[in-house]
Amino acid sequence: MIRIMIVEDQAMLRDSLTMAVDAQPDMEVVSVLADAADVTGVVERAQPDCILMDVCTDNDSSGIVAARHVKERWPRVRVVVMTGMPDITFVRQTREAGADSFVYKNVGTKDLLAVIRSTMDGYSTFPIPKEVDLAAGGLTDDEIEVLRLVCEAKSRKEIAAELFLSEGTVKRRISEILVKTGYDSIMKLAVDAVAKGYIVPRLKSE
Image (cartoon, rainbow, N blue to C red):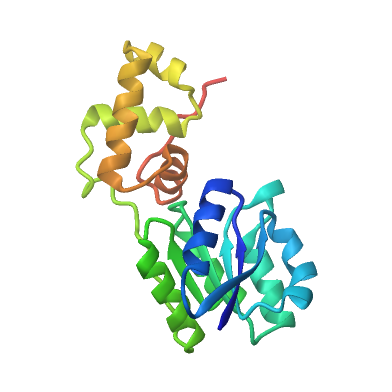
């Protein structure tokens, strides 16, 4: 029986993960937490074989930091880090922390359970990080202009005023940008776009 600890701050997802794991004949949930900072204080008592750890949890605690602490103190415990955020640095950070596997939350339950089982068998699963490519994403000039203003920390209202659009149109364009690039957060895309030099924010004159 694989003893699982689940660390997830979203109550609905936490409950569904618990139900899915407990429904397996070879798994059982032994602890459920919302804050990754609490993990090390519970591992000794719960004695999990595997920890399913979210990257960002309650109180801004980092699942990757918690994973590092767990692997340093209890190297036998397998750690599967998960996230719904597209930040491409998370995969590298997870490897460096010593965690055993990494999955995105858009995987199906069947695939997630397969990753847990294979991780327990000694195999590591890490996706190939997806690089942002605005050209390949096929963004129009208007969409790139919206993204540029997001990179300049403009609010949706400010973007609408500057481009003479309604806020609804700006919202729709942002949604289309996310669909084309595969990101689920416009701010994450903006950070990557600036970091990689795809967008160079205009500096204020004052």
